[in-house]
Length: 132
Image 1 (tube, rainbow, N blue to C red):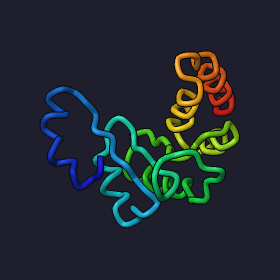
Image 2: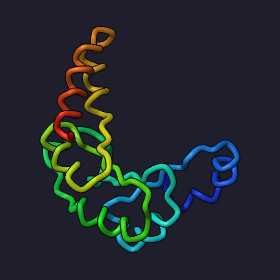
Image 3: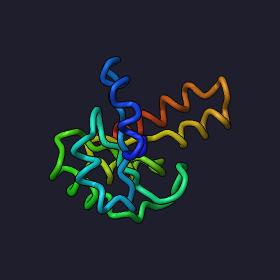
Image 4: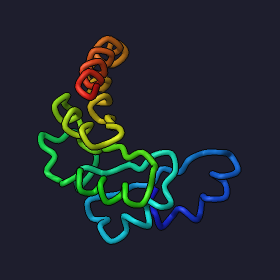
């Protein structure tokens, strides 16, 4: 949820004990402290500009964003947007509290449909091994 929208759902999320996940993007430099202070559940650190999806390379200094956020919160910081290889996941896991993978799994499902369970299992296992 964009930080500016947080007040609109704060009361309902609190009443139902649902954490509103805030995003910190590479363009959030001046707002990282405010976003991090209000974060609940985990802080979603966006690794790249643009739309979500598979990326060949993560060029953003994600480690610096996380270090800045950690000055203002104890909330775990998880990195997502473009993470799709075990190598990328392992690199991000060195300084992030979590790694978020979505589009790569959706791509497997799109390619294999209802027969994708084993491929997803194998993929997730490789990603987990890379961050362990």
